[in-house]
View 1 (tube, helix red, strand yellow):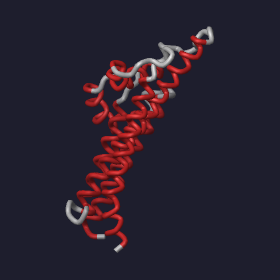
View 2 (tube, helix red, strand yellow):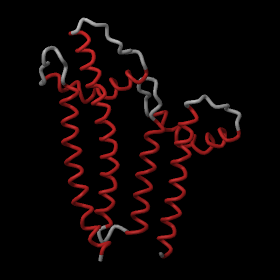
View 3 (cartoon, one colour):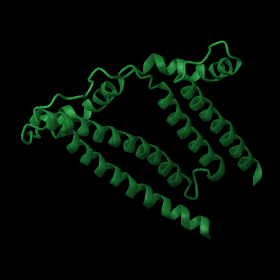
View 4 (cartoon, helix red, strand yellow):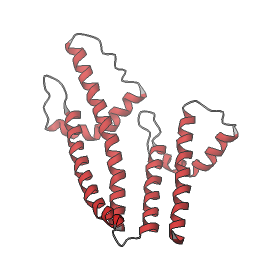
Length: 205
């Protein structure tokens, strides 16, 4: 394996463990744990150095703290970057593999955003249907999840309203934004595939 390979494995284990610590802290926050519990204090002691600085620069959306999500993707990207450098270097296709890994993280984030766009489109269709049927909408616009969905997708939806007309008074801009996002994700996927193919060929030799 070599020294660099051993270091890469060690880095992978350490950062992978840290990712799980953040996940456990997020899960515990959902059940209002005892702040004086030794396990809770240990999790806070290890994760606060990363989460506290992120909270200062990342605003909450709909009352939801996004710093753990940013931390998870950031650490995952750092993990892949370091492991790729240590195991493959930047030569012999290592650079292509690294770019493919970064694009993979971007693709994962984009897929998550695509799901949020479809959720918002569902909100629009539901509200439109209940209005046309003369029924009262049961959508709670003050719910934190609803606020998060609207605030997160508004930067993508708002510019489209200048060009996309309504269809029978239904705002279809979230669907248009979702299809644009799908196209971009497909394009990124093609790039990842083209970059990964040489690396797969080298591994099989």
